[in-house]
Amino acid sequence: MSTLEAVVAANNNFTVALAKQVSHDENVVMSPLSMLTALALVCLGAKGKTESQMKKVLHFESCTDIHSGFKQLLSTLTRTEEYILNINNTLFVEETFNISETFLNVSKIWYSSNPEIVDFKNNPKTTWKYIVNWLKGKTKGIFQNLPEKSVDNDTKLVVVNTAYLLANWTQSFPMIKTKKGLFTLSNNEKVYTELMSVGGNFNISEIKNEMISIIELPYGKMKNLRMYVILPNAYDGIKKIQQNLSYEKLDNWTNPDNMKKTFTEVYLPHFKIDSSYSMKDILRHMGMTDVFSYTKSNLSEISPESLYVSDVMNMVTVEADEDGTEEVTNADDNLAFLYLQLPQKTFKADHPFIFIIRDLLSKCFLFYGVFQKP
Image (cartoon, rainbow, N blue to C red):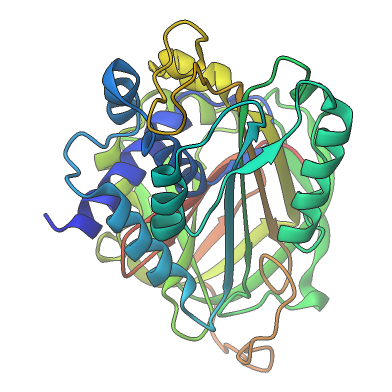
């Protein structure tokens, strides 16, 4: 296994582990890759039990060259005109800690990131405003909401990571076909929402023993980036999928070789999910405890003093409309293409579903989300 393959495997296993932890009762989206990159940056400065816990939870144990692998992967994913993938990771560190020159150098080399030295101790509100403005600037205003309670006088180190994708479908959903339709919630309540629709040749599969259907919706001309919508047969089937999820299953479900190109009428609700949440409790539950502990944390490669992580803030947004995740220039939208045949299949996402956005070339999962309600 190459370094790149090892990092991708770590990311995809981490995706599944996170999926089992997130709520199945609300809309959620996360970028495991963004989170993993941020935590790899922290791991760069960890030693002893803190480092071993982090490597186990992050699935880094079989990676011999983690940091060069991430540099290679992020370069591969962002070096394209097909879409815009923006991932930002920064450590905000209390100014009373002396940051190692070695850490400053290696974090710049591998992650093009320097820690931000801030005054949590004396000016938490000013520091909070500074981080909010940093978010606005780095993400062109997409993220500008950080809970004020996320920092206080006792905050030592906050890890902030953001991710968003700007991309258009290979085959757009014609505006004229978007209609009001019923969406059944997991409690069997029915609500009206905007349902987009399009007919075309799409990769589709049915996993009968799992009672799910899956469709592949590609982005751009090259179709290297693809969204997979995993739709349970039952309106309340999300919980069961998440509980029984494994890396092998998710890998097989999102493998184009296991799908069949079929002329399908696709119905998908308009949705935009903005997630901004603390990952501290989830990561602790997964086994990464020492890095958050004042008495046990060993981040001596970052600072010789007793530094620990106060929180990990993850901010992600994914949108699906007629054009794609966001409006961005893209040539091919096939609006004039007419099929003079009846659909062989209908894929109607009119109840809760899971979605995955995956890069076909690296096989890396970029986003994982659950859509529960309009």
